[in-house]
Length: 149
Image (cartoon, rainbow, N blue to C red; front, side, top):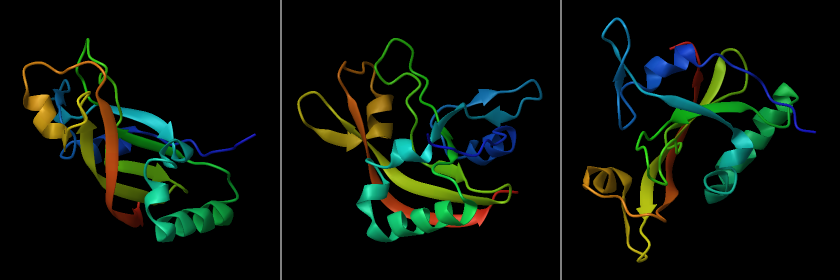
């Protein structure tokens, strides 16, 4: 059975406020991005496998904290009535300790039913989003950081 750390997404929501695609305003009028949780293992096939160095760093960090998995958060796409609604997109922030996190940056790509690959942001600007769009990530960078922004 995998174990993973739990985290408070409240502190992280402000981090994503400048990095996600759609913003919502809270009661104080501050723009906040909707975020969704996932585990680092959910990213394994899509992102960690793109870099041997990143995979090694993650495995070492998991060993150091004595866990099999950790919790992550990511911005959510808000497009009701499409396959993309509530899809988590980059950047991903994963929490290994109370103060230690990993921020994974990636290009968000959309694979259209006809096989065309475009930037997700370009697709979301279109009036109609076709059914059957797949999201793919292209790893650009990662950074180990202090989770207390």
